[in-house]
Amino acid sequence: MKQRDFYFDNAKFILIFFVVFGHLLRSFIEDNETIYTVYKVIYTFHMPAFILVSGFFAKGFYKKGYIKKIAKKLILPYIIFQVIYSVFYYFLYNKGTFELDPFNPHWSLWFLISMFCWNIMLLFFAKYKAVYSLAAAFIIGLAVGYADWISNYLSLSRTFVFFPLFLLGYYLKKEHLYALFQPKFRISAFAIFAVVFIGFYLYPEVDYKWLLGSKPYTEMGAASIGAVFMRLGFYILSLIMVFSFFAFVPRKQYFFTNLGKNTLYVYLLHGFFVRVFRESDVQGFFTKPENFLLLAGISLLLTLLLSSKLITSFAQPIIELKTSQLKKLKDRSRAYARFYRKKLTS
Image (tube, rainbow, N blue to C red):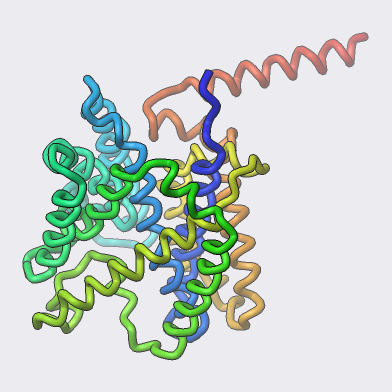
Protein backbone atom coordinates (compact mmCIF):
# COMPACT_ATOMS: atom_id res chain seq x y z
CA MET A 1 0.00 0.00 0.00
CA LYS A 2 1.30 3.44 -0.95
CA GLN A 3 2.21 5.48 2.12
CA ARG A 4 0.26 8.69 2.58
CA ASP A 5 2.38 11.83 2.20
CA PHE A 6 2.75 13.44 5.63
CA TYR A 7 3.76 16.76 4.07
CA PHE A 8 0.38 17.47 2.50
CA ASP A 9 -1.59 16.29 5.53
CA ASN A 10 0.51 18.58 7.71
CA ALA A 11 -0.06 21.46 5.31
CA LYS A 12 -3.82 20.94 5.24
CA PHE A 13 -4.12 20.73 9.02
CA ILE A 14 -2.08 23.90 9.54
CA LEU A 15 -4.09 25.71 6.88
CA ILE A 16 -7.46 24.72 8.33
CA PHE A 17 -6.24 25.97 11.71
CA PHE A 18 -5.56 29.35 10.09
CA VAL A 19 -9.02 29.28 8.51
CA VAL A 20 -10.60 28.85 11.95
CA PHE A 21 -8.28 31.39 13.58
CA GLY A 22 -8.87 33.93 10.82
CA HIS A 23 -12.64 33.64 11.16
CA LEU A 24 -12.44 34.14 14.92
CA LEU A 25 -10.18 37.17 14.48
CA ARG A 26 -12.66 38.82 12.10
CA SER A 27 -14.66 40.34 14.97
CA PHE A 28 -11.67 42.35 16.22
CA ILE A 29 -10.02 43.76 13.10
CA GLU A 30 -11.72 47.14 13.40
CA ASP A 31 -10.54 47.76 16.95
CA ASN A 32 -6.94 46.57 16.93
CA GLU A 33 -4.35 47.43 14.27
CA THR A 34 -2.10 44.51 15.18
CA ILE A 35 -4.97 42.02 14.89
CA TYR A 36 -6.00 43.61 11.60
CA THR A 37 -2.46 43.14 10.34
CA VAL A 38 -2.34 39.50 11.44
CA TYR A 39 -5.72 38.95 9.80
CA LYS A 40 -4.53 40.31 6.45
CA VAL A 41 -1.30 38.32 6.58
CA ILE A 42 -3.30 35.12 7.15
CA TYR A 43 -5.60 35.91 4.24
CA THR A 44 -2.69 36.38 1.85
CA PHE A 45 -1.92 32.68 1.97
CA HIS A 46 -4.37 30.39 3.80
CA MET A 47 -7.16 30.00 1.23
CA PRO A 48 -4.84 30.49 -1.77
CA ALA A 49 -2.65 27.66 -0.42
CA PHE A 50 -5.70 25.47 0.21
CA ILE A 51 -6.87 26.09 -3.35
CA LEU A 52 -3.44 25.32 -4.77
CA VAL A 53 -3.29 22.03 -2.83
CA SER A 54 -6.78 21.17 -4.07
CA GLY A 55 -5.59 21.69 -7.64
CA PHE A 56 -2.53 19.55 -6.97
CA PHE A 57 -4.80 16.63 -6.04
CA ALA A 58 -7.08 17.12 -9.06
CA LYS A 59 -4.67 15.42 -11.45
CA GLY A 60 -7.05 12.48 -11.89
CA PHE A 61 -9.91 14.62 -13.23
CA TYR A 62 -9.83 12.77 -16.59
CA LYS A 63 -10.59 9.37 -15.02
CA LYS A 64 -13.97 7.78 -15.59
CA GLY A 65 -16.47 8.70 -12.89
CA TYR A 66 -14.36 11.57 -11.51
CA ILE A 67 -16.96 14.28 -12.08
CA LYS A 68 -19.66 12.13 -10.50
CA LYS A 69 -17.35 11.52 -7.55
CA ILE A 70 -16.62 15.21 -6.90
CA ALA A 71 -20.29 16.11 -7.38
CA LYS A 72 -21.13 13.71 -4.58
CA LYS A 73 -18.24 15.00 -2.49
CA LEU A 74 -18.94 18.71 -3.00
CA ILE A 75 -22.42 19.47 -4.32
CA LEU A 76 -24.42 17.19 -2.04
CA PRO A 77 -22.72 18.49 1.16
CA TYR A 78 -23.22 22.02 -0.19
CA ILE A 79 -26.98 21.50 -0.54
CA ILE A 80 -27.23 19.82 2.87
CA PHE A 81 -25.26 22.52 4.69
CA GLN A 82 -26.97 25.33 2.80
CA VAL A 83 -30.21 24.09 4.36
CA ILE A 84 -28.65 23.52 7.79
CA TYR A 85 -27.07 26.99 7.88
CA SER A 86 -30.34 28.58 6.76
CA VAL A 87 -32.13 26.97 9.70
CA PHE A 88 -29.26 27.87 12.03
CA TYR A 89 -29.30 31.54 11.00
CA TYR A 90 -33.08 31.66 11.30
CA PHE A 91 -32.87 30.81 15.00
CA LEU A 92 -29.54 32.54 15.76
CA TYR A 93 -30.61 35.91 14.38
CA ASN A 94 -34.33 35.56 15.24
CA LYS A 95 -35.34 36.16 11.65
CA GLY A 96 -39.00 36.74 10.96
CA THR A 97 -38.96 34.71 7.76
CA PHE A 98 -37.07 31.59 6.78
CA GLU A 99 -34.77 32.20 3.80
CA LEU A 100 -33.25 29.48 1.65
CA ASP A 101 -31.43 30.49 -1.52
CA PRO A 102 -29.51 27.58 -3.09
CA PHE A 103 -27.67 29.91 -5.46
CA ASN A 104 -26.13 32.24 -2.87
CA PRO A 105 -23.79 30.18 -0.71
CA HIS A 106 -23.83 30.86 3.00
CA TRP A 107 -20.52 32.25 4.19
CA SER A 108 -17.75 29.63 3.79
CA LEU A 109 -19.81 27.29 1.61
CA TRP A 110 -18.59 29.21 -1.44
CA PHE A 111 -15.52 26.97 -1.48
CA LEU A 112 -17.57 23.85 -2.30
CA ILE A 113 -19.27 25.47 -5.29
CA SER A 114 -16.02 26.98 -6.57
CA MET A 115 -14.11 23.75 -6.11
CA PHE A 116 -16.65 21.89 -8.21
CA CYS A 117 -16.44 24.55 -10.92
CA TRP A 118 -12.63 24.49 -10.90
CA ASN A 119 -12.62 20.75 -11.54
CA ILE A 120 -15.05 21.22 -14.43
CA MET A 121 -12.95 24.06 -15.86
CA LEU A 122 -9.93 21.75 -15.89
CA LEU A 123 -11.60 19.74 -18.65
CA PHE A 124 -10.96 22.69 -20.95
CA PHE A 125 -7.84 24.38 -19.57
CA ALA A 126 -5.80 21.19 -19.10
CA LYS A 127 -5.88 20.57 -22.86
CA TYR A 128 -3.34 23.30 -23.43
CA LYS A 129 0.22 23.99 -22.37
CA ALA A 130 0.60 25.30 -18.84
CA VAL A 131 1.93 28.69 -19.90
CA TYR A 132 -1.10 29.41 -22.11
CA SER A 133 -3.68 28.04 -19.70
CA LEU A 134 -2.25 29.93 -16.73
CA ALA A 135 -1.98 33.15 -18.73
CA ALA A 136 -5.63 32.85 -19.80
CA ALA A 137 -6.76 32.04 -16.25
CA PHE A 138 -4.95 35.05 -14.78
CA ILE A 139 -6.31 37.36 -17.50
CA ILE A 140 -9.86 36.18 -16.76
CA GLY A 141 -9.27 36.63 -13.03
CA LEU A 142 -8.10 40.19 -13.62
CA ALA A 143 -10.84 41.10 -16.10
CA VAL A 144 -13.77 39.67 -14.17
CA GLY A 145 -13.46 42.41 -11.57
CA TYR A 146 -14.89 44.86 -14.10
CA ALA A 147 -18.14 42.91 -14.30
CA ASP A 148 -20.38 44.81 -11.88
CA TRP A 149 -22.88 41.96 -11.81
CA ILE A 150 -20.28 39.52 -10.49
CA SER A 151 -21.00 38.69 -6.87
CA ASN A 152 -21.65 35.93 -4.40
CA TYR A 153 -24.16 34.35 -6.79
CA LEU A 154 -22.92 30.77 -7.25
CA SER A 155 -19.60 32.10 -5.94
CA LEU A 156 -18.81 33.32 -9.46
CA SER A 157 -16.34 36.03 -8.46
CA ARG A 158 -14.21 33.79 -6.28
CA THR A 159 -14.43 30.98 -8.83
CA PHE A 160 -12.78 33.08 -11.52
CA VAL A 161 -10.44 35.05 -9.25
CA PHE A 162 -8.97 32.00 -7.50
CA PHE A 163 -9.01 29.57 -10.44
CA PRO A 164 -5.42 30.49 -11.49
CA LEU A 165 -4.17 29.15 -8.13
CA PHE A 166 -6.12 25.91 -8.55
CA LEU A 167 -4.76 25.54 -12.08
CA LEU A 168 -1.21 26.25 -10.92
CA GLY A 169 -1.59 23.54 -8.28
CA TYR A 170 -2.72 21.13 -10.98
CA TYR A 171 0.46 21.75 -12.97
CA LEU A 172 2.80 21.59 -9.97
CA LYS A 173 4.76 18.48 -9.06
CA LYS A 174 5.98 17.38 -5.65
CA GLU A 175 9.52 18.23 -6.65
CA HIS A 176 8.56 21.88 -7.05
CA LEU A 177 7.40 22.07 -3.43
CA TYR A 178 10.15 19.88 -2.03
CA ALA A 179 12.72 22.26 -3.52
CA LEU A 180 11.53 24.82 -0.96
CA PHE A 181 12.99 22.80 1.92
CA GLN A 182 16.46 24.20 1.39
CA PRO A 183 17.61 26.40 4.31
CA LYS A 184 18.04 29.44 2.07
CA PHE A 185 14.38 29.30 1.04
CA ARG A 186 13.16 28.89 4.61
CA ILE A 187 15.22 31.87 5.74
CA SER A 188 13.83 33.88 2.84
CA ALA A 189 10.29 32.75 3.70
CA PHE A 190 10.68 33.97 7.27
CA ALA A 191 11.94 37.33 6.03
CA ILE A 192 9.03 37.59 3.57
CA PHE A 193 6.44 36.99 6.30
CA ALA A 194 8.12 39.63 8.46
CA VAL A 195 8.25 42.19 5.64
CA VAL A 196 4.60 41.61 4.69
CA PHE A 197 3.52 41.97 8.32
CA ILE A 198 5.45 45.22 8.71
CA GLY A 199 4.11 46.50 5.39
CA PHE A 200 0.48 45.88 6.32
CA TYR A 201 1.05 47.39 9.76
CA LEU A 202 2.58 50.57 8.35
CA TYR A 203 -0.11 50.88 5.67
CA PRO A 204 -3.38 49.87 7.39
CA GLU A 205 -5.39 51.53 4.62
CA VAL A 206 -4.80 48.48 2.41
CA ASP A 207 -8.30 46.99 2.23
CA TYR A 208 -8.52 43.33 3.22
CA LYS A 209 -11.42 42.86 0.77
CA TRP A 210 -8.89 42.64 -2.05
CA LEU A 211 -7.78 39.35 -0.52
CA LEU A 212 -11.29 37.85 -0.53
CA GLY A 213 -11.82 37.90 -4.30
CA SER A 214 -15.57 38.20 -3.80
CA LYS A 215 -16.34 41.73 -5.01
CA PRO A 216 -16.21 43.63 -8.32
CA TYR A 217 -13.78 46.52 -8.53
CA THR A 218 -16.57 49.10 -8.20
CA GLU A 219 -17.45 47.87 -4.71
CA MET A 220 -13.85 48.42 -3.65
CA GLY A 221 -13.73 51.93 -5.05
CA ALA A 222 -11.31 51.07 -7.82
CA ALA A 223 -13.13 50.86 -11.15
CA SER A 224 -10.29 52.45 -13.16
CA ILE A 225 -7.61 50.65 -15.15
CA GLY A 226 -5.47 50.74 -12.01
CA ALA A 227 -7.70 48.10 -10.42
CA VAL A 228 -6.14 45.45 -12.66
CA PHE A 229 -2.69 46.29 -11.35
CA MET A 230 -4.01 46.25 -7.79
CA ARG A 231 -5.37 42.72 -8.21
CA LEU A 232 -2.24 41.68 -10.09
CA GLY A 233 -0.19 42.91 -7.14
CA PHE A 234 -2.27 40.82 -4.76
CA TYR A 235 -1.88 37.79 -7.05
CA ILE A 236 1.88 38.18 -6.86
CA LEU A 237 1.78 38.74 -3.10
CA SER A 238 -0.39 35.67 -2.52
CA LEU A 239 1.85 33.45 -4.65
CA ILE A 240 4.94 34.61 -2.77
CA MET A 241 3.22 34.03 0.58
CA VAL A 242 1.84 30.63 -0.45
CA PHE A 243 5.25 29.29 -1.39
CA SER A 244 6.77 30.88 1.70
CA PHE A 245 4.20 29.01 3.77
CA PHE A 246 4.99 25.72 2.03
CA ALA A 247 8.66 26.22 2.87
CA PHE A 248 7.75 26.00 6.57
CA VAL A 249 5.53 22.91 6.41
CA PRO A 250 7.22 19.91 8.11
CA ARG A 251 7.55 16.56 6.33
CA LYS A 252 7.58 14.35 9.43
CA GLN A 253 4.58 12.77 11.11
CA TYR A 254 3.17 14.61 14.13
CA PHE A 255 0.21 14.14 16.47
CA PHE A 256 -1.98 16.18 14.11
CA THR A 257 -0.80 14.70 10.80
CA ASN A 258 -3.53 12.09 10.39
CA LEU A 259 -6.15 14.75 11.10
CA GLY A 260 -5.09 16.60 7.95
CA LYS A 261 -7.33 14.35 5.88
CA ASN A 262 -10.40 15.59 7.80
CA THR A 263 -10.16 19.27 6.90
CA LEU A 264 -13.53 19.28 5.11
CA TYR A 265 -15.20 18.40 8.42
CA VAL A 266 -13.51 21.30 10.18
CA TYR A 267 -14.32 23.65 7.33
CA LEU A 268 -18.03 22.82 7.30
CA LEU A 269 -18.58 22.55 11.05
CA HIS A 270 -16.51 25.35 12.56
CA GLY A 271 -18.86 28.02 11.21
CA PHE A 272 -21.52 27.19 13.79
CA PHE A 273 -19.08 27.86 16.62
CA VAL A 274 -17.74 31.03 15.00
CA ARG A 275 -21.19 32.50 14.43
CA VAL A 276 -22.27 31.81 18.02
CA PHE A 277 -18.98 33.28 19.24
CA ARG A 278 -19.57 36.47 17.26
CA GLU A 279 -23.06 36.88 18.72
CA SER A 280 -22.00 36.19 22.32
CA ASP A 281 -20.64 38.42 25.07
CA VAL A 282 -17.48 36.32 25.27
CA GLN A 283 -15.85 38.59 22.71
CA GLY A 284 -15.54 41.27 25.40
CA PHE A 285 -12.85 39.20 27.09
CA PHE A 286 -10.52 39.55 24.11
CA THR A 287 -9.56 43.18 24.54
CA LYS A 288 -5.90 42.76 25.48
CA PRO A 289 -3.30 41.57 22.96
CA GLU A 290 -2.20 38.66 25.16
CA ASN A 291 -5.74 37.28 25.16
CA PHE A 292 -5.49 36.72 21.43
CA LEU A 293 -2.94 33.99 22.14
CA LEU A 294 -5.76 32.28 23.99
CA LEU A 295 -7.92 32.73 20.90
CA ALA A 296 -5.23 30.95 18.87
CA GLY A 297 -5.31 28.15 21.44
CA ILE A 298 -9.10 27.93 21.16
CA SER A 299 -8.75 27.76 17.38
CA LEU A 300 -6.29 24.89 17.69
CA LEU A 301 -8.49 22.98 20.13
CA LEU A 302 -11.53 23.49 17.91
CA THR A 303 -9.58 22.27 14.89
CA LEU A 304 -8.41 19.19 16.78
CA LEU A 305 -11.92 18.48 18.07
CA LEU A 306 -13.73 18.84 14.75
CA SER A 307 -11.20 16.65 12.96
CA SER A 308 -11.24 13.96 15.66
CA LYS A 309 -12.58 10.45 15.08
CA LEU A 310 -15.51 11.06 17.41
CA ILE A 311 -16.81 14.09 15.52
CA THR A 312 -16.06 12.76 12.05
CA SER A 313 -17.80 9.49 12.89
CA PHE A 314 -21.06 11.27 13.73
CA ALA A 315 -20.74 13.88 10.98
CA GLN A 316 -19.76 11.51 8.17
CA PRO A 317 -23.37 10.61 7.25
CA ILE A 318 -24.20 14.24 6.37
CA ILE A 319 -20.80 15.23 4.93
CA GLU A 320 -19.78 12.11 3.00
CA LEU A 321 -23.14 10.32 3.03
CA LYS A 322 -21.38 7.31 4.53
CA THR A 323 -21.59 5.50 7.85
CA SER A 324 -18.31 3.55 7.78
CA GLN A 325 -16.68 5.56 10.58
CA LEU A 326 -19.79 5.37 12.73
CA LYS A 327 -19.85 1.60 12.34
CA LYS A 328 -16.18 1.39 13.31
CA LEU A 329 -16.88 3.56 16.35
CA LYS A 330 -19.73 1.27 17.38
CA ASP A 331 -17.54 -1.80 16.88
CA ARG A 332 -14.76 -0.28 19.00
CA SER A 333 -17.25 0.68 21.71
CA ARG A 334 -18.63 -2.85 21.82
CA ALA A 335 -15.13 -4.31 21.93
CA TYR A 336 -14.20 -2.06 24.86
CA ALA A 337 -17.45 -2.93 26.62
CA ARG A 338 -16.78 -6.67 26.25
CA PHE A 339 -13.20 -6.20 27.44
CA TYR A 340 -14.20 -4.32 30.62
CA ARG A 341 -17.08 -6.70 31.26
CA LYS A 342 -14.63 -9.60 31.27
CA LYS A 343 -12.28 -7.67 33.55
CA LEU A 344 -15.09 -7.06 36.03
CA THR A 345 -16.31 -10.67 36.05
CA SER A 346 -12.87 -12.28 36.20
